[in-house]
Length: 533
Picture 1 (cartoon, rainbow, N blue to C red):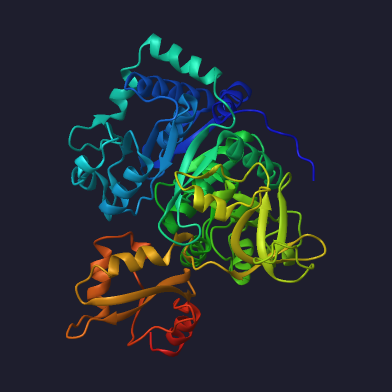
Picture 2 (picture 1 turned 90 degrees about the vertical axis):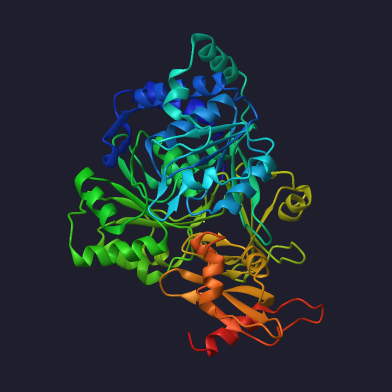
């Protein structure tokens, strides 16, 4: 299907919105008392961009942003794009070693960090970084009152800007290319350790432009955004789709089902996003104390396999008549397929819709690359302007992921019917998806192998009614040593984000292996199903 090219950068997208809807609300944070119009957001973006330029941040520099959802997250997203710098997003659940990995791997010049979450003190973590191992890191910037070591406050950065800095930003902005990389997200998209997915202005703006008309957002709509901005779901399908259409972003700092429902009722939100676990929690909170959610018109469920009953319940009991399901991955900016509010309930509950406009999708034999017959399972491949520029500094991984003629191999098993509707039916890759968060088995295995009692370990996914999948590990203990599940979980919890901590621990004497010596994780899943939880 032909689709017009959206010929602008991320910075220009905001410029156009500010010109078209100057006085309409663009960003709302009820907990902070912030209500920025599009013109106010554009001015805040200019000030931050100029201040960052004053402190040496320029085109191509990598800046890690570690924060909950807040207004300045949005302003920084645009400000860095306006400078041609690269926004590197950081999961709010990261621990010190994980943060250091991203800072080092991305060669980040600056880290912008907030105070943290109730369970994760960002400032304390930043203070414990081994700076000598991060030679590229020159600037620490605290936001929302956060400070650590020799950090500078974000507001101080903003007020430091002078007229020549503003002229510098305008000059850079006029020379930006739509093919400049301006967003990098670390994801365990296949196997192994997280890789930096490089996304361009073209990737992000075009993907937003393809999604917006299907969701039928309109100027004055209000999107309750409780999915994290550090994922593409938040900063592309959230920020850019909303601002492509004159829709206000109503931010929820961190997910709390009751807070989300209260915000929808109070702010009269017309749209809601979430992963299945969020909708399950919201359904429970609505049963406990019903709210008036009649303002909702459309919603998107994505980020993990979406159970049919959860989708049907959310549509009916949360009063979202236009609830749709999206499929995507970070390497695809992220949207690949999307159902439409005009599709039947049956289609919206059982498929992930059709390929987005301007995007090619094929179901291929993963070994030969030949397209399979309609209705037959195969690997979902996609091609178009949404496909990433590649993995940062990992050319071999990029070549494995993208074919010479531009097809991105997703690793997901799917079928496509005669009408073009896609169903996700499994995975070829070993990735574990827990509540919308990707976990590569190697990340968990590497941590547990450092435990003094562990001889070897294999991680795999097991079904979960709430999270969709949870992390499980099979552990071989060293002769003469002893440990238990609680001790191993505690060991993990001190070193990795909570979503990577094993929910199930199986102690085994040996691993089931293939003829080539690889662990048969599907057999481990069978063992786990037969073992007491």
